[in-house]
Amino acid sequence: MSRFLFVVPPLTGHINPAVGVAAELAARGHECAWVCPDPGLVRRLAGRTAVVFPCEGPVPGAGHGVRPPDIRGPEALKFLWERFLVPLADEMAPGVRAAVADFAPDAVVADQQALAGGLVAERLGLPWATSATTSAEFADALAGMPKVAEWLDGVLHQLRARVGDPAGTGDPRFSPHLVLAFSTLELAAPATHTERIRWVGPSIGHRPAAPGFPWHRLDPGRATVLVTLGTANTDVGARFLGECVRALRERADRVQGVVVDPGAALGPPDDQDKDVLILPSVPQLALLERTQAVVCHGGHNTVCEALWHGVPLVVAPIRDDQPVVAAQVTAAGAGVRVRFGRVTAARLGAALDAVLDEPGHRTAADRIRTAFRAAGGSRAAATHLERLATPAKEDT
Image (cartoon, rainbow, N blue to C red; front, side, top):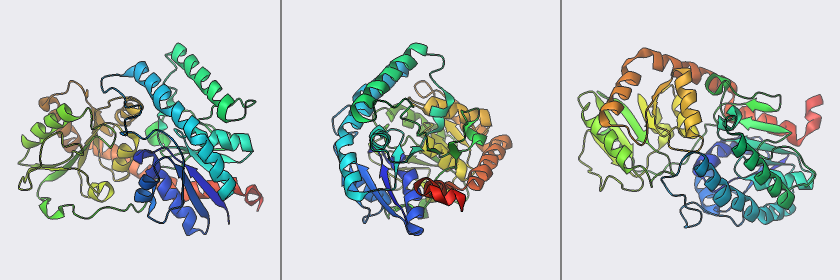
């Protein structure tokens, strides 16, 4: 049996896909451990018994590197790298090295945004895999911005000199050994495709969910629409969520909304409201089994979880990889895109009517659902990792 060390940022959407893979590896008798600046978050998502090595690093929402809500495009990218990703790598690196010394893994699994994982493994000569929790990086989003691409290359070169092997030449976001892409080309195409990239589809597994969701309030006679902006956009969502609520109420004769509002941007929820259920959190995977449409920000996890269930989407990308993911959804025919900052209730309503009433969107979502499930998910990812940790298995 082998030992795998998962190196993850303190971000729910980046930990969740790895949780399913780690659970599958553990079920096969392997040992898994984690490195993260927020051990409590890992244990909440992976289970209380998860072995987590602590490390330093900025934690979103803790006052360090909080990004202004109004920056977009190249400025947002620069802020993300300079104020979060690079400090995260520098600060995590000593903890990752200590975890490797203590746990003695056979392979490291490094999230694309936890660059210290791959760089430390590179420096120590350990095999390592990239956990690519968004397929946007494979789309060469900087192809039209050569100066930005050149700047980023310089940032990565300097980071490698501090943390990794100074003689290394590869992009530390992509392992030269194995890249686990949690999507398929049915959604992500056109995308870079090389032999080391394994399109395993979403990692969907058991996810601990807090009790208390009001299942009894769901109306089986109406279509259920889930509205969510993920866990990292509470600072910018008030106006958008308000427009969503208005669009949902205008369709209350045939639609019931479930709106996720973790920051209480819409005010105190009304437990007696039968048309729009406003809640701080929801058991998303379980709820998607009873949902007919999703309105979201184009976050990769939310999009893939919706399409795993064959649910079409209205996507309103905000920043980062979200415009790329939203473009994948519309190119595949599985949803409609709207403008996050300017959309009105009328435009949202029209988009919602389209994904609910026009069969083409659901047909496309069903096609991607079939491809996702055939790709193997956490089981396929675990098999690739087993081969990485024990190369001799390739010849048996």
